[in-house]
Length: 99
Image (cartoon, rainbow, N blue to C red; front, top):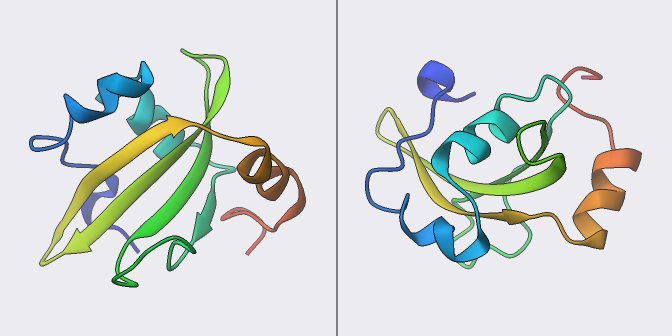
């Protein structure tokens, strides 16, 4: 699904700091084997972004990560500590491992 299974944060890494996160924390949530992938992101205007909800042990929290796959690169768009809706989705919906 994602090229190289890594996120390129070169343009938005500093942006997610406003939520108290670093690219390393977002990458850890992205790599969660139990992550939930919602494609497309329900809040996406373009319909091209994907929402990933995963666990970060570094932050001891669920993290919501928004990525944009484009021409072989998975661009990091945003990330934040998951709200109660995303926490419920993570607990209740089938994850990558379940599918």
